[in-house]
Length: 78
Image (tube, rainbow, N blue to C red; front, side):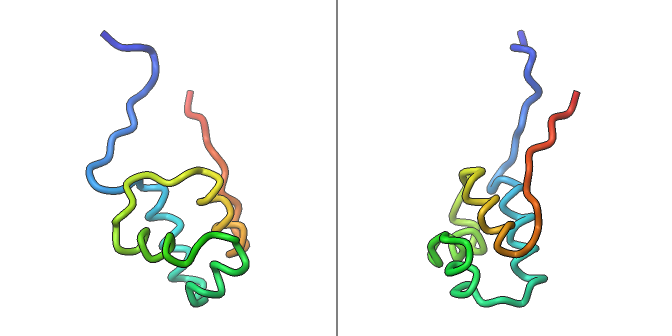
């Protein structure tokens, strides 16, 4: 029986974190600089890169993406 919602499954880490980590790599900014401009702790960024975080808050992902001059917003599939 389904509840009407599509499933969102991942094995090790939320794919949204991987997208933001790729943006961090492309930007060539240091983690300290990203941390300072986004307000997200440097250790959080390190944990994302080392795949120690399974799920991140949307606001945290959006803050880092915004600091890297990218928009991070939810997309609803119908």
